[in-house]
Amino acid sequence: SMRTRLSTQEGHRRGVRDVQAYMESYLDHGLPATSTDVVGYASYSVELREPILDSSSVRTYLAGLSAWHEELSSLFKEADLVDSAGFPLQLANPCRSRRVEELLGVLDKRYKKPSCAKDSFTLRQWYRIFHYGFVLVRRSGRHHRLLLLFCTFGCLRRGGTKYLRVYFDLVHTDAGVSIRWLAPPDPTSPHVMVVRDEPGLSPFVRGTLDLDKNVDARKPRRFYLPAEVRALGVRPVDLLEDYVVQEGVPLGALLFAAPKGNAGWYAGPYTGHGRAFKQAYARAFPGARDVGRYSSGSARKSLGQWLWTWGWSHRMISDVGGWYTPKVAMDSYFTTHRATVLRALQSLGTVDGVVTEAHWD
Image 1 (cartoon, rainbow, N blue to C red):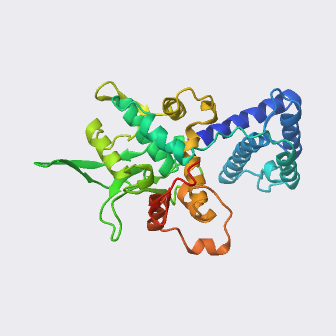
Image 2: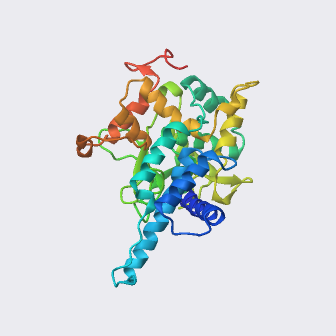
Image 3: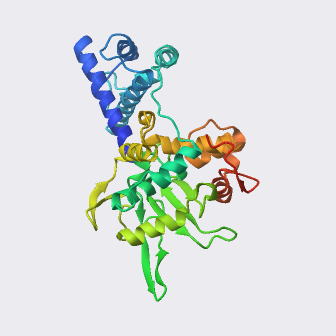
């Protein structure tokens, strides 16, 4: 589907090509495959090939193979194809057989490579990176700092920031320039705006994603940034609006397109998150030798760890970050309200409203 993340689509295509190459080299025939072919491929992938694959990679590749068989089966039905006996021609999906599913369970237990996941930032680290890690006299420094803010408090993956757009009018008065935020042409398309008219709430940033991991295109993911996180000395609403006005972000443009020169923008979405955050870490902690422990995903993971440290539930954290978590029946009857999310983010680093550094490391 075109609503599937581009990285997932490419992973599926790579999987089909890889299984096809294996079958042509070792089995002397190509696709479609049988469950026996799939079992042979999975075993070969974790034992014999160079380099061997992790069990999760095998699953990704077989997900592509499964999608390929499902698509071909649908085409058979649409064409009303029949076999030699006159019965509708059917194509079984070998990846859904019991023996394949059982084998994948074994591979997950015995052939899972050690995790290479990067660390999250502590509150103390993040505070220092945000305030001392970026060269703010440069447009790129201001761009990277805003990116860290959104990746952290919006719990955004690198791909989640790529297509966020902004729609607004600039209002010029004697007091200066302000922003009147506009709804996008398609309310479900990726965008960011400031909401000021929510009863009982201070202004907050609201973002919408329609294409990301664990996001259903029929139900886009919303994320929220509060007006202020007092303990960390950040004001997301002000930072966003100042950036849009001062940098001259065009109406309907990608919010995180990379600045070009003193006024221009590069056309495509920015993807250098990991390098930018590592450089900021190195500036904030001169001489640090652990820069390699952090990457673009460190910001996203940090918020989940902070919320857990401050006593918020698994359900709350999964709703804030868009993480998948198994749900019981009652979970379908309630959601975490944006007011609760904003209260959780605003209160980070505090106890009973008082800033405390007791759990910052």
